[in-house]
Image (cartoon, rainbow, N blue to C red; front, side, top):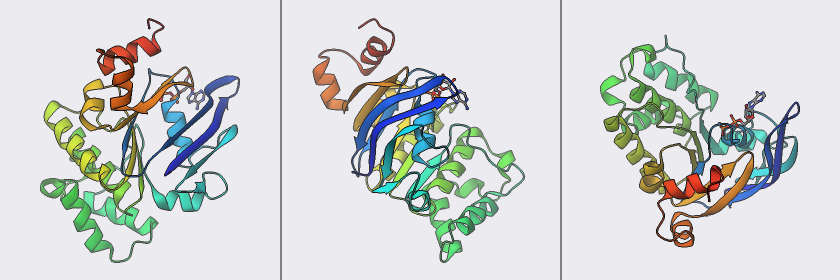
Length: 238
Ligand code: ADP
């Protein structure tokens, strides 16, 4: 199991953002993490990447505990946060060199050229990040997330705000990466789930309400689309 989450709970003051969630993901699978706004997706992802600690429960990534072995977790995880924070004054290559340095990558020039190629950044690599379109900024975020060749990728709404052409490109890239890595991605776009996900976890008000393969969940709710299943499970209309 690449990601294993046991009874994970996070409180922000009195606000319970996630409530004793348990799930696991398998290598070589893309798992869609779905839920309405405020369901607890970003909180879960931040805990899995070692950005914030849980209140109770435990989580491991590639067998490493996210709190007590957070260095090992960071080595094995690539993370694209929802806001994709970037230094807008940096050139694309410069920003990748900076991240390569953080990861102490051997032969950074070779690796930077590889990720530029892989993420389709070639035509724009000479620009400052602030000069790039949103789609290309997402590619920079993805290039930064994969530069150390992590086994697990955690992508928080990687396609939000992209135009249809950009969507196709990023989804294809995610599918390609998903052949060799474990990917967990959050999204509000149900077509995306059909297009890229093998497995689906649906979270609502901090609790998991479904966790299955995409095929399995469709079998269970025969005749319903993933959108109808999502609305049924998260709006109380099931
Ligand atoms: P999602 O990613 O599914 O939209 P979040 O994990 O961002 O959900 O948020 C889950 C809940 O936790 C929400 O009610 C949100 O307002 C709350 N929350 C998130 N971050 C904080 C924070 N730093 N302080 C207080 N409450 C927070």
